[in-house]
Picture 1: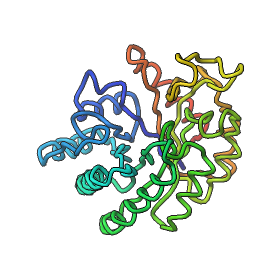
Picture 2: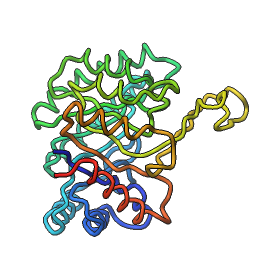
Picture 3: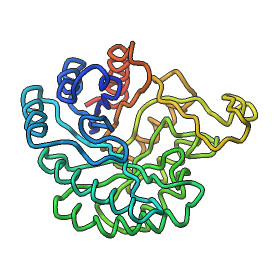
Length: 288
C-alpha cells in the first residue's frame, strides 16, 4: 500500500499553502508533501510559520481530509561555514517543532553543501545529524534523504552509503526519479538503484526528465562549456527518458509501501490536468 502525495509547487504562486490542500482535495489526492515556499519554509530560510498559520493548516487538514504526509525542506546544514551550518540547524529545530504541531511524522530533505568540497561537507552533515538526532527522536519524526544535483553528494550509491553510515533507524532514503540521470551519471539504471536502497527506501519522487548525458552531453547546451551548473527537470511522465516500466516493476518487486510524491514543476498553466493524469497513472500502477 502506497500513499500518493501531491507536491503543490505549481500552485504556490497563485494560492496560499492552505489553499493548496483544498486544491489537492479537488484533484482527488489524499496527501500532500509541502515543498519550499515563502509562506512556510523557504530554501535555507528560518521557517515563517506562526501559531495562526499552523492552526489554519490543521483546520484545512480537518476540512478537506487531506493530510500533510511529509514536508520537504532544504536547509544548508552541510555548509563548511560553521556559523551558517549552526543557523541551518536552528532552522531545522523550528521546522521539527512545527511538524510536530501539524502531526507530520516524516520529512524528506536534501544533503545540500557544495560538490566542490564533498569531504568537508560530509563532515558537517554528520555533525548536524548528531546535533539534531535527539530532536528527531523526541518528536518521533523520521527523515528521508535524497541526493540532489549540486549537493555535496550527487550519486545514488554514495548517498545511500552516507545514510547507512549514520546507523540511525529513523533515517531513511528517498529516490528521486527526475534525478535518475544525475544519480547514475547518465546510466539511467533506475531499477538497480531502487533495489539497492530497498532496506531504507521510504519515499519516491515521481516526475520525468531527459538524460542530460545523452548525445555526447549535447542534449542540453550550457555556455560556457564546462560551466559549474546542473540541468534537470521535473516533467510529466512521458515527457522524458526515465524508464518507468523499470521503476514501477522494481518498486513492486521490493514491496514498496511508502510515499509516492507527484512533483512536476514548471508547467503551471497545465497544473490541474497534469496532476490528475499523474494521480490516475500511479493509482493504476499501485491499486488499493
